[in-house]
Length: 180
Image (cartoon, rainbow, N blue to C red; front, side, top):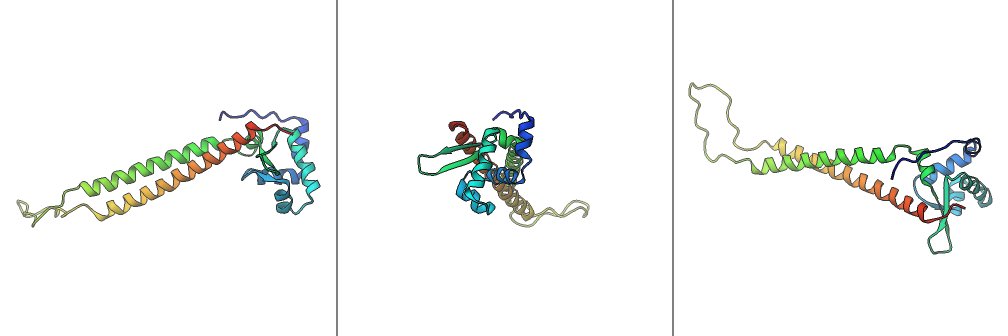
């Protein structure tokens, strides 16, 4: 998704001046919710929450829609999400790049450990009698570091993919529904 230009007008500032509406925006940034879920979370009456949602929807920050069932779910619009998380896409890309780099580095370290030849038999003495002894096989630290990097990379990639998928689901939900 391209960055959304947010135009802050006097009306938008009036809508954002309410602490309750800011709380609703923050809660909806995690997932879409019904009026009942929001009322329970905020410990407010459903009518109060509905009024605040109506103001947010009029400002274009929240969209209401149903998923074919009896419940109406509210979610942030791209403008609402852009207001709360202006560079969320950039963060996801950075996390994904770091995860992929870590994963590739870990796999390379494990492959290097597994493909290093192991010496059979004793190491012949060096001429002159000095120098460092030659290790008999690959260092175990290489395997440990490779596994650690691969696990960290896998976790970061999974996290970035989950964030991306959740963001896409919210965008698809908002794009398919009309703001009420």
